[in-house]
Length: 83
Image (cartoon, rainbow, N blue to C red; front, side):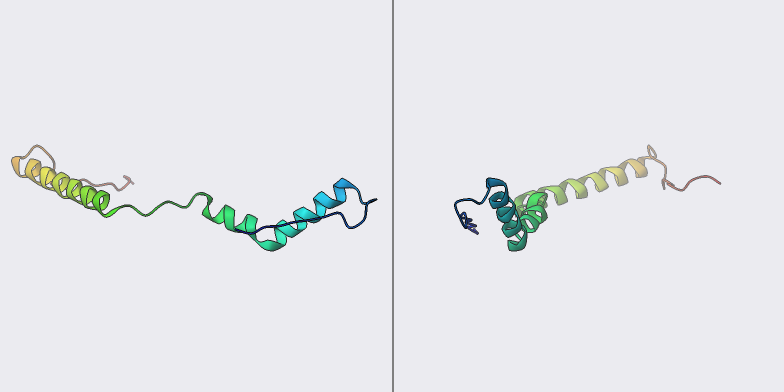
C-alpha cells in the first residue's frame, strides 16, 4: 500500500492548491493505473469448478451424440449464412 502525504508548504497556501498537489502525487505514483487494471480482473477458477464444467461438457457431448445416433438430431448443424 502506498501512503501519500501532502502538507501545506506555507500557511498562506490555499486548500485548492494542496488538493491539486495531492492529485499530481497520486497520478505520479501509478496507484490509479494499478487499481484500474485490477478492477475487472476475474479470479482464476478453482480446480473443482473447472473439473465440474469439464464433466458437464463431456456429458453434454455424449448426450448429443446419443441423440444423433437415435436420429433425433441432424448429423451436422451448419452455422453458415445462406448466400
